[in-house]
Image 1 (tube, rainbow, N blue to C red):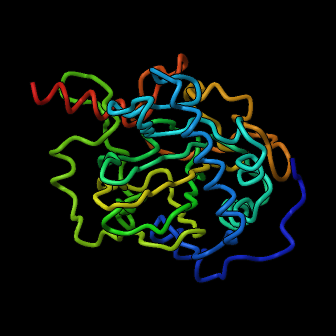
Image 2: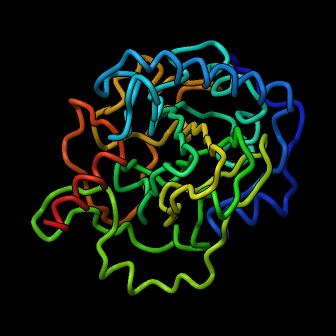
Length: 296
């Protein structure tokens, strides 16, 4: 674990200002090609080992179409727990330096996940806000996505709604009171999504989004994969208001700076999610169950 401050500056003042104004930021080709290729090989090895897995477990979130002959994963859970290369990316790579430039010198690790959108198979992610899943005492919480493949409109690159992080945290419960992991249709209809930005970027790039930012992604209709490795971080004085759902020993670990003497609060109300202390499989599972119930 590194506790030193960054010696190399990665962001300009204009980039930092744009993140706070718009709620997102893209940094092209932050991670070098050799490291990205090593991450691809590692991810391929995890997918290969999933051939023997028949149901989602502590590491794998299986797509319903998964078979031993043709493994299909929606997610690798807690990758930083499960390999030193994933852990380096989360704790010691330039990504951490970028995060300190946005959140300040003292930051904590929240969680990691690797979303896999296979060719012609990758599931969409419906319109949502991360803050609905893990609200904190203040809003210095963000997620960093590293692209292991070029992201395009065809393969389901993420879309973001600039400035929406300054709006409310919308309910992610349906009319029957079930937490479904996405915003209600009527709330989405009231949003002006015309300014939405598609984060089409080359492999090795990162995109960062504030945890209140409204975002989504389309399914992968292309013949290639689109794999996105996500690490989430908080300012050290941002305290989670809900139990940890990741069951990771790395959750909440201080990775830069010093422990705070006080917890910092942001004024205002926010909707709370259900009790995730027993964990949950993934956003795909929540949204898929909601869609299945709606279609009945």
